[in-house]
Length: 274
Image (tube, rainbow, N blue to C red; front, top):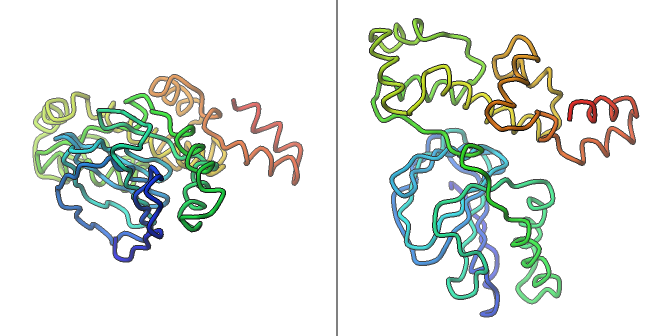
């Protein structure tokens, strides 16, 4: 982070050692390192490609990664924005996940982390706030957070462009020209490096981008177009295939509340998409 803000030293009974918040710099490298305590990396507006336990993980805005103690991790900030890093005490942390684990940071958990960062170590609300935070930290299914990143520079160049703009409509032939290689070679490399065809990998990237848009209250049709689908029906089908759920599942509950206040018809539209 280019600037960081660390919460005050917490009492020795707290499971939280520190909370750091700040803005990342564009394409900032996070050097590989490890420490004994577990860590939660959360991005509010940044997009991070983390290398954790020799695997690449995409952490888009609104998501976090739980990194167990002793696990080497590093990565790159693909898109600058706000990030938070929480360090937990080894002997007092109630979460015992032994593998890197993705989590979704919804509106309540997001505000709770900000509250814990603002409050002093002796604030009477802190123990209850910490307990609620752990209650809300639930693991995502692997496909909800992980996007395998290729290492070959030709495929990686295509992958990073699609991460930056999931709505890019170029097909494999155009991408092969872009990286000066053959279509068959690029197709083979995509499958060898990611385990997926180009089309399947791009679909995963698009759905990940769509989840954040939906979580911010973007309508399904607008989200579909933003991530490269000309027809909402095709987007809904792809979304259900990747996540097992409809796009409406990811619309924030507070979006429905706001719609109720401002326009009841909008509420009906939001609910109908679920």
